[in-house]
Image 1 (cartoon, rainbow, N blue to C red):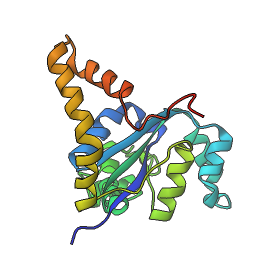
Image 2 (image 1 turned 180 degrees about the horizontal axis):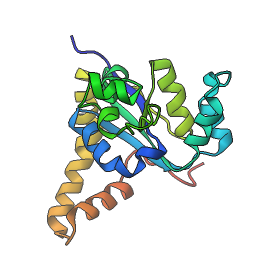
Image 3 (image 1 turned 60 degrees about the horizontal axis):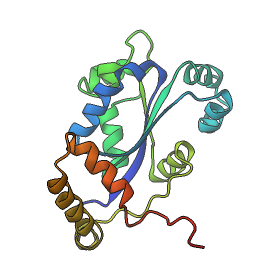
Length: 200
């Protein structure tokens, strides 16, 4: 029986930000869905809050300085068993260990061999951490439970397909120069779940 679809947080750290397109390709090639992404620069206060569990450790000041030294890219990833599958793709925490034990992992490929702790990416270590970390980076995002099996089929046939059929029918009539952009704009305007303004 398949594991339940999970969500987890992936973060590309400042030393890996220039490699994000290659890392994103590895993510997609491994069967993850990218639910959302956000590029930002953490403030000192945000970095301290995110890594609060390490506050008493000697490396904490260096960690905060490192994490605020440039932009980061945060992703919400989804797939079956996402937490452990993302950590598997990341590889061991130390770059030297990753290069030795799992040379195809993200940390082995993109980590800095001269600095064991510059391991380019972060992954939530549990579902509880994932929920907290996703909320940290995406505080305004409301995520519904992920549907699978019959629930997903029913949702697609009742909520998605009718709107998509209308959109594709209009697309065939209009024949725009850039069909993908036209379709995206049409779906934004005709989204049946869009809140209605001024109906109170």
